[in-house]
Figure 1 (tube, rainbow, N blue to C red):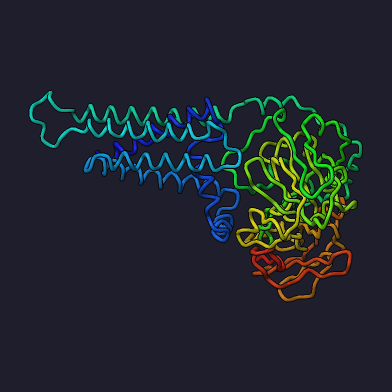
Figure 2 (figure 1 turned 90 degrees about the vertical axis):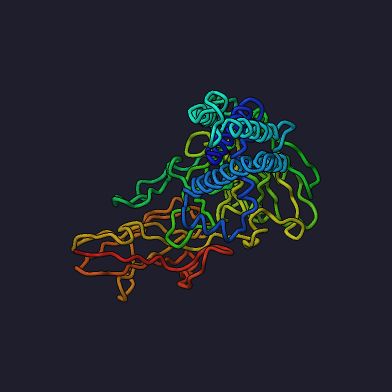
Length: 502
């Protein structure tokens, strides 16, 4: 019974913390700030292992682990409180204090950021003392003079139910439409001064199962360190441009959206994408060229990097040369595939830089651009073992047939996508078993900054077969066959799959 009392008490405390977060600090839910603190403290290789094992479900995995840990600590607190008063409540208060520390060390901390975790610790400790005191003794002196088992169960179930309902309600209210959601819904994208040409019909092959040449917003890959999607009110958003510049300035939302916008199709990729992996997508972006912001600021000295920062303190170090390149569509983006950026992809504004992995370029919810030098600043992921600069590697992928698939003998489409951003793909070849390399048909690439579809008709014979794919870029460079892991600068190798022909 003490363990059950501990679980019920901590759940009641968490519920109280969630409700306080809704009222005073939506972004500082106790579970969220502790979870994000765990992410920040986790070594880079361990983060990569979790992404590899769970992919887009990595955050759900963290929540499950966090829930199990909290449950174990809560049960332990109940046992300790029953045996040695003050030890259990002290453990609960320490948990609340960890939440306070995690909240106050966030870059976006406010004066009331600690209150949800304070409420969790105080209410949890009080509930624990109350429930432990209502545990019936093993031998009651006389009926009616000691708490009954039924009474204890009632209090415990009631505390747990109230905590659970409050936690769920608080979570739903936090995600409900607020000022940011209302503003995004009302926002109409500015008309592009320079529009992206329509995607030609010849850019896509009619092959079932092939990756669409343009990725729908809901299917676009996501990797970031956020457990709760930030919802920034654009009326409160601004971008500071400063550092090694002659004319530092701050850009607000109204000024940004009044600037002449450009549309470009750009493929983005995560450095954690393994050979043949899914962490790459392509979209049409609307935004203002970053190089024009840099021109306005007037870069000085020997600056070679732009240190961009998200509202929550996440940072990326982007080579200044890539952002200043007039032939590279590096944007401060506000739109994605004809609609405002989804919250999950950075609303109100984010960076989009072709040809660089996201960890050095694709800052979402961006609020600060510091023009500086690589020698003077280290970004979030490079401090955890990733390479300082992250150009996207030349790669190709088989989408059809799927790895391990069983297909009927006869004509079979082998198809997929290939990319070498800011250079372009000139040829894709497919190999069956150890046979000769066969040249695939290429679709028309939207641009050198996007992937391109390819296909090859295979006269498949019955049996087990191994398929490989490789590409050659427009400069005649053959994609390397050398296998490299994603750490520290991106994976390489030829995508290889096994299929059964029946």
